[in-house]
Amino acid sequence: MSITKFRTIEGRSPGYLALLGALGALLLAGLGSAWYMEHNGHYVTGMSNQIVWGMPHVFAVFLIVAASGALNAASIGSVFGKLEYKPLAPLSALLAMALLAGGLAVLVLDLGRPDRLIVAMTTYNFKSIFAWNIFLYVGFLAIVAVYLWWMMERRMYRYHRIAGFVAFIWRLTLTTGTGSIFGFLVAREAYDAAVMAPLFIAMSLSFGLAIFILVLDFSCQRTHLPINHEMLQRLARLLAIFIAAVLYFTAVQHLTNLYAAEHQNVEHFILFSGNKYSQLFWIGQVLFGGFIPLLILLHPDYRATRAWVTIASVLVIIGGLCQIYVIIIGGQAYPLEMFPGKEVSSGFFDGEVSTYSATLPEFLLGLGGVALSLLILSLAVRVLPLLPQCLEPPRPAGEETPAS
Image 1: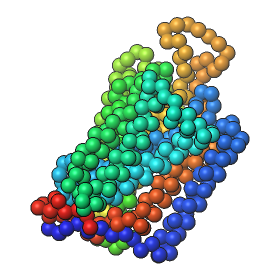
Image 2: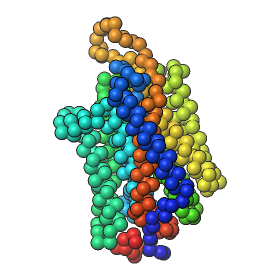
Image 3: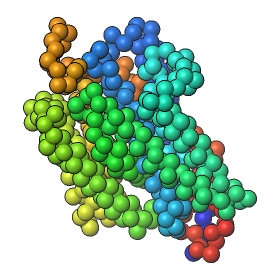
Image 4: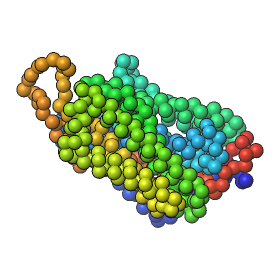
């Protein structure tokens, strides 16, 4: 077997420059939208006192969750010792950091005043899961950066498995923390479930791997690197397992809520009321984001075809955005019960389903976060040798041999 060698891209082709230009324009549009919302106030958005997390949060949570899953290839290579994934590890680590940076940028800009980040980073309420998540996000970036450095540095390569193991544990903790934001939120009947943490872990594995497959496929096409047919099948099978896991935990979430009397009304609202949340759940999340890509990837002929694997990955991403939308927006749209078990009344939206329609600035802010992630990735592979020259696994006896 060969020693893994890595390369940069030349970065002078019209296609690459056009890509940078398009991502830069999208990023500027996102920054302009953040300024517009900060200057005019959140009333220019679709958000309200009832729905305080809108479309920017859908993009932000999706990117943060996917960041953890993008590290799949690196973790399989370092933690589980699968040599065939080693050539993909640096790109996997870089994508994980880029996605998290994009998601956090959207969250920071949605604070209205970015200077409030100083308050969030210096004043902690450790009874709140949000305070813990700041440490999880910053720690993830630091650990994966060290992991990437040790993978690429000859003197530190012998320790890269330690960093890989720490990153593996940290990514599970990070996704548990993100899922627990909703699992610990007892005020909303659609949340308040311990299964949210494992559900978010499964979602991260699926969404992150789908994005990684698309990035790898695009990189191979642009660099004329022949993608390993066996590797493509491995990734496709892995994605099928993760899709099935998401469907399983989604079923557990809703079936347990249907069993509990206090959650039955909100479950009926999400699943059977025929509103846009029901349609997004059954059509967007379950059908197009779950069963169709699962059937594609389980079929041996389709799984071996590059185009079908790409289609399945795109469907997983679309279904993932639908799932996050239903969780975040749908959960807030259902009427809030202020004092569970008590009879109270007021004239302030008692029992009313809240409405929400995302505005253009919200979409642009969310897409700006996606653009930032892809821009970081595109520039990094231009200056750092992170793309493999071939997808052959390194020799087993060369564990001490770093990427060169």
